[in-house]
Length: 257
Image (cartoon, rainbow, N blue to C red; front, top):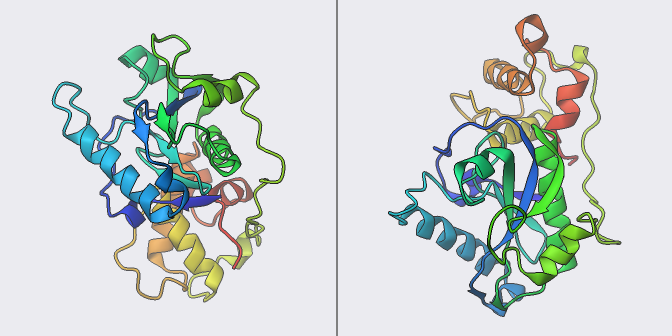
């Protein structure tokens, strides 16, 4: 998964309402003309995503608290964080529909760039699987399912109707750090794995760090942040306490170096 986080985008934490579970995910498109220049330069995709958020925040009628989607997927295979994990979408048409499904938008439109690349479809699939790890059910629908709209457009909707399969040859190449065992997580341990764990905890919204200095060394910030992650995963009481457990570690997707 090639994830671009809100932090990397320079955005604050999402002010969207909490939504910890849904029936599944709805797929969207932009519904307007999208420049084919996105295919040439990933920076244009990031600018497009920034512009979408800006336009949503400026929409007085809808009164969005944030960009409406949980994630976006670009033609280069990047998954761009929007409202993210555990947040209600504002994109599905009305509040009952927003409560029922999370939302992912492919950066394609009704004119110009209309056909999703295989890399984009793979990124949408990454987003679906990520949301399933955090409360989304198995349903994969188009925006038009249950709402009068042409979204997500013909090409994306045809893919959704096939079950949104991951295109052949785009299987995730990224491998994640295997669980090293609870005893490995001793305070003061220094490892690049710890630094990558730090980054992932920040990315999933569990930042309880006071500083990013010495982030490759296990300290009190790691303990507090990981316990927040375990609570987000549904663990309570002693089960949510440090050290990390195998289930939550595997769900965190700490990348290999």
